[in-house]
Length: 80
Image (cartoon, rainbow, N blue to C red; front, side, top):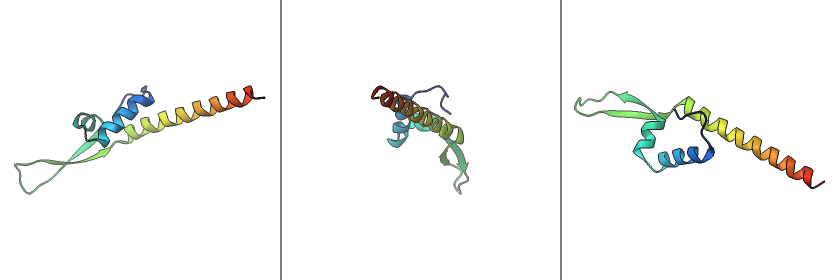
C-alpha cells in the first residue's frame, strides 16, 4: 500500500506505472494471489488493487476537490 501522505504527482506516477506495465509499480501496488495450476513447474498469480491503495487514491482526490472548492470560494469573494 502506498504511504498515506503522498501528493497527487506521486499518485499519478504510481497509476501511470501500472497503466504502462511497470513491473516495479505493479509489485508495489497490486496484491497477488497464487493460482493452482496443473503443471507444478510454473507459477501464476491473480493481481488486483488492494482496498487500502484505493482508499489512499480516493482520499487524495477528495483533498484536491476540497482545495479547488476553497480556491473557487476565495476567487468569488475577491470578485465582490
